Image 1 (tube, rainbow, N blue to C red):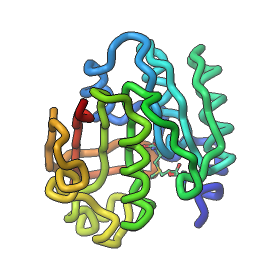
Image 2 (tube, rainbow, N blue to C red):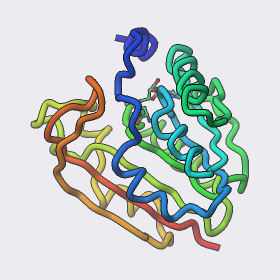
Image 3 (cartoon, rainbow, N blue to C red):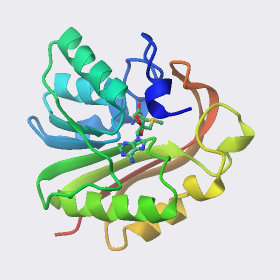
Length: 199
Ligand SMILES: C[S@@+](CC[C@H](N)C(=O)[O-])C[C@H]1O[C@@H](n2cnc3c(N)ncnc32)[C@H](O)[C@@H]1O
């Protein structure tokens, strides 16, 4: 099923509430922080961050997801900049953002994932914060969402190695019960990784 098909219904596939990770880590963002959200989906995280005072640019490949993100922003009375972007083709800006959010972007196999991580590092200003949240390697055993391919899943070792020299502000590998629409429902194996770009 394509992402557009997945997002074709009236319901929000991952719900409209932000990921718990986002609510727990948002304190790191100063008021007015410029946040780049990668593969934002239907807007649950971007609109919540905007409501907290962030200036959010949301990149997303699916037209249906973008339309629903814009509708959610109207409903919540916030402004977000939703852009039609395929991350495989993106011309990454340089040092434009205070924070980059990558929440469940595990559609990316290692070559694209590496390119996205490099791009995220480029887009962050020195001292900016990278926030990554996704499924851990043991997630396929839970059957509650996410890719099956181990190469698309995360470990803390993998993420630390991807950002050598960065100051890790928070890292966690844990199980939790997700209730994020039909897309993520039930016990899940999760990774949090928050790190500061050097400089
Ligand atoms: C699992 S969903 C997560 C959505 C959102 N980050 C969230 O946590 O609710 C993955 C998202 O990646 C988007 N996506 C897939 N391939 C993409 C690509 N090449 N470029 C940009 N977005 C992509 C999908 O359309 C989908 O919205």
